[in-house]
Image (cartoon, rainbow, N blue to C red; front, side, top):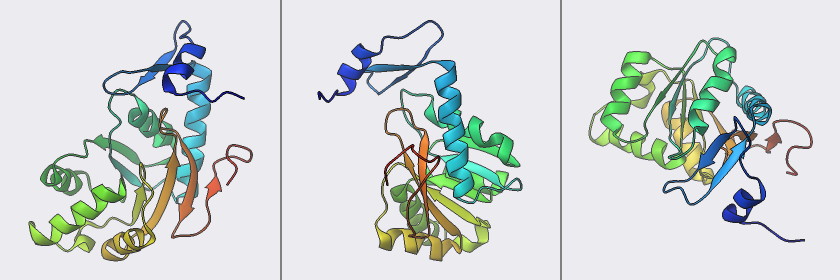
Amino acid sequence: MRWLDRTGLANAAPAAQGALLFAGEPAEYGLPLAASEVAALQALTRASFEKAGLAKTDRVLFAVSQPGAPAVALAAQAIAPAAASVAVTGPKGRLRLLSTIKTLKPTMLVTTPCGAADFLARLYMEFNIDPVELDLTKIVLVGEIASPGVAKRIGKEFEADLAELYVDPIFGGALACRRAGGAWQAADEGTLAL
């Protein structure tokens, strides 16, 4: 068996007509997905968010990015039919994030553990705002594995249900979910060995 790195994988799977390329920044590789593969990835993402507690009444705000890839936009598009609304904002600029939250009034925030912890600290120290005032009922952590202490603290301070998603590092699809420190659940049986 030979393991492929990102460059080797890109060479092993040349882009077909109409494929969507996922690349890093700077683009050291380009990995293609056909439309049917993107649809399958979006179905797994939707299933993972539903396991994370996504409801039809949720207003979701993504405060994450994956430079060089359409992953965040595709994830937002994937869950839009299962939510009241979905918006995407950049993760940089906590004052901008606060302003966006005040304007859009999301019930679910999707961010990284570091982003959530930094935002929490700034709410207290810079903005003098109690996180509960933002009315976020669900926080979904992606992109990094949160330490149990950080995850617990974020959920407690926002008084929000907390879930973590395991997200494919290249294509950005959510493949598994863990709620409140419980066991990981694959989006679909056979997707991942957990």
